[in-house]
Image 1: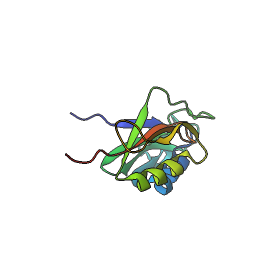
Image 2: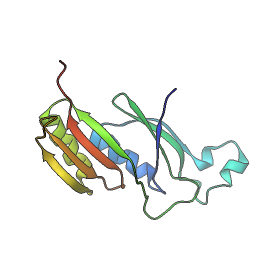
Image 3: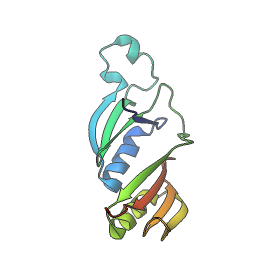
Image 4: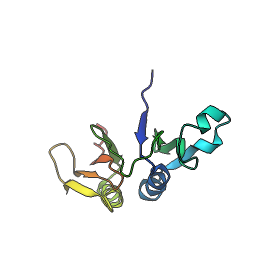
Length: 139
């Protein structure tokens, strides 16, 4: 069994994925627009056929999915979800945190904690909540 995360960007999926490509090295695996559906019923669901029906992208070993949904919204409303990003070291944590927080809001600046050398929390410009931690050394 596997659980996969689908982020609904309310019309901003393509911009969000481009941002994640630059910020954290995301690699697009699939990007299907509503107009790409061979099913005419599916093509009639969305009011904007150029928006993303389904996308998947890889960040490290993790696959995330994205959609603009059936009805696009002015601003996505992603609540109750935080993605945790494990950095290899302090330098990488600083770089990832700075890139993701560009245009977003920092809730907890990167700082030393009792569980790791650096940890911080932010909400990116697309409304996705992130926690960036330096991975614990192997014991």
